[in-house]
Length: 349
Image 1: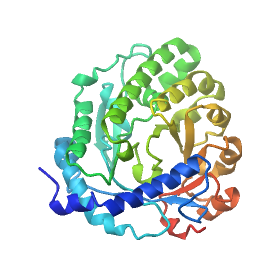
Image 2: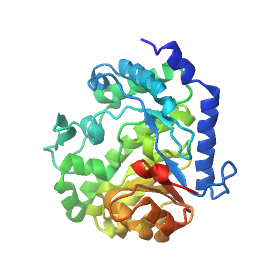
Image 3: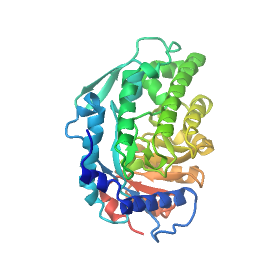
């Protein structure tokens, strides 16, 4: 099964590819603290276009058909790129099993209910986690099929968003619940053993994608909102609010930094809760180049802006109590990318 001729034409349009690459360079200039040679505006904004399949179950039953349907749909949506001062990267994203993709690879039962994915935790003890054999894992093989089909369709414009690979701590909490948090305080060696196994697996998965997909088309999860310049990775730091600053510094941060180091340029951490106690550790992470704030974390924008390094970019999503306008006023538009909110169109220079 192949995409239509019209889809192939649109998704290989040299003018659209050039426009995308100009935006990538603008982002790279922001990351490199260089002046924006392409535009006089001072505020960056990202709000991408996502291609969707005809039916949701295609993603599990036929990854190849899912890719074709998403690409055909994406080509029809490209006209939505209205030329405004917002980067609208065209994307498809194989986000199979949502935030429980890694949990399923490690043996959890994963199920869909009330509009979202859930998992049932492992019944084994912390310290006994088994390294999965990715070559024999059905979930991972499905994910690989989608990425390889994307390459086979030979389209140069869209980016391919990855499944949720998250982080070692996020995955460990999904696998064990509160038991891993208790073990971090009472049996740290067992907890550290399992966290390392998880992190090694995450690194292995990221390495496969990085070595397989074209650099310009590889983006981590939520690519329509968290688009970075090519060559950057991403971790999820959601559960860092559940551990002390000391545990994060001693155990979690080195794993997160090692995961980001699988990408030559480092990458991003997603935060959505009360994480201000780890800002000093985030500042010190060599491979952390950006943070993505939404929901509760967005309220603490000023703490991140003043507490992080000058070369760490903030991807900001507005929330009740911290609007885009407030964020721009607080930062002067510096080191700031406004993402994926309905009022993106109000962003001005």
